[in-house]
Length: 472
Image (cartoon, rainbow, N blue to C red; front, side, top):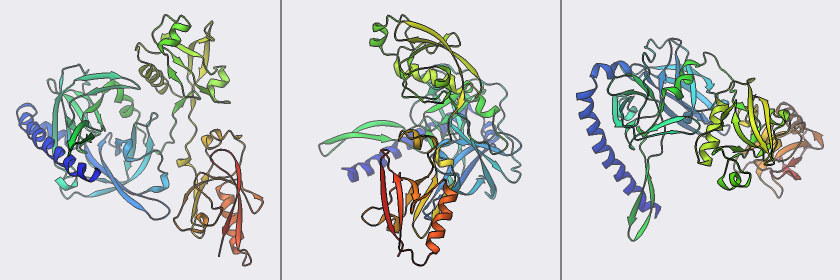
């Protein structure tokens, strides 16, 4: 079934692009001056790099970016730099200047926006190109015609292109987003403008396209039609302003605002009736992580947050939108900010709880790593959630097994190491961190009489086990 669907999907994409792109070209000639397109396109570049792991497996990634300032900072979608990808995997990062001789400029990775939507890179040599100019940000309205300007990919010589469409939806979840027809605008991280005034309206973000039902030989199923050069969603100015104004000039560790709660949900109608809550919206707190800001402030699991700083957390009757609105407001706070939460506890007690917004713990992908070629294993330092998910003390020491090379000694035998194991001891000696792990393994391997190594581990369920790895 899959082999039948693939060529049909490709055909559908070709037809959609053939009609859509031609329409864009005819409309743009009459509505948007070519000089305007060329001027904006000067601020658009392509960012590319090679993602390569410890086993030398690699893939080349690239995406369009926008030059934000004269210091050479370029903003790209965070999809180009997945949060799960260790920084050590970013190799040969370059900015492609898509005109003239198409030269490349070496660049360095700076980091992500606090909410993780955008990433930033910086040119190591002058770009000598104008940054994106934003004079009069426009407010977006339903039914308004907008256009975006992008650059085609390498196969199409990086030529400027344009997409024109009408705003058909405005939705506010974690942030405001506007939607047009699928294939309506240019690639992700393209500037969007109001067609009537020419004022800046926002920036496109990736979208997955439309799902359509195809029937082939009596079988039917949904097929998602998408195109990497076009998108149907953009973030208006009020959602991208901070991405542009707060762009870093130097490498900055991610500081995501965080209360220290998990698995919260929007207020369901049944709960509202049970506790006689007149207000439509609220957020029921799920898990409250010990030692984190919410726990320190006294917030508890099953508490219902009705207001934040005296205002309702949301005005939507949909639970998913309630939670998204609450998260958006937390993301808008800088770490250290005090927020006052109006809370209903046990359906009877109304409380005002002041919480100092903290910083989300660093992910495992951003911690030091070590690869031992002889064992064929990659380990990293322990992250907060490695221990929390296994209900272990944050004082627990050891290293996390991240990867094991196929056919490597570490993955062979009756009791092999596995990705997701926490190594706590080697040959009955306590392991503190990656640095100690590397020293201990090296020392044991130098001993000519050593034929195997014994690893004491904690698995993903928090249970202990012993793994034997033969060295010869």
